[in-house]
Amino acid sequence: MAFTIWRHPKPFGAAGRCIGCRTDLSVDPRKAKRLAHRIRAHARRHGLPRDVVTSPLARAAAVGGWLKRWGFRWQVDATLREMDFGAWEGRPWRDLPPAAFDRWMTDFCGFDFDGGESVAALLVRAASWRPPCALAVGHAGWITARSWAGPEAPTPATWPPPPRYGAFISEPSAA
Image 1 (cartoon, one colour):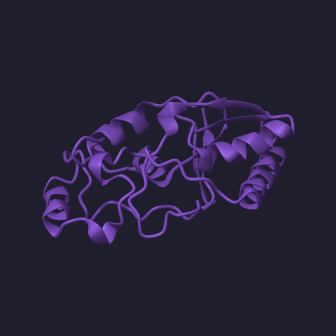
Image 2: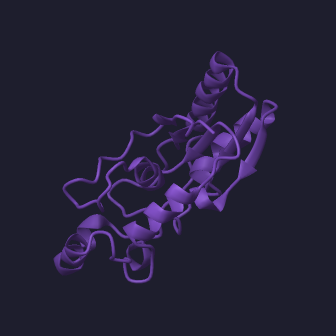
């Protein structure tokens, strides 16, 4: 199934911090509503059913809540959650010891952030997801992993930059 996934709005308190699935940050309700309007317009423009799936994290689910108010069927799927940054979760990037960061750069796909999820595991989780509908709201790490096109494992140099807050990626159907 073809689908379009949007990155959630910018959450409160994320700047400069390692934010994954264990840190459930909220978003400005106006920004969530604004993104929901864009998704609703996209659905109308493309004649899509009024169905949406989001990550359970507040920064994505807030958009689903608005769409539900407007008559969309809203599903929550934990598969769409952001990467688990383990012991790094919620910490300011600047406070991470250089040696820890070097460990990640040396084993970019295998490093699990001291009890979290590796990039390799995220790639598998994102690639194996089957969209239940054409519209989704998720997170930068998951979206980047889902769109990874390389036949080889990513490296720090080849990993793409994250999509902007509120930006979307469309994936064609595998016909």
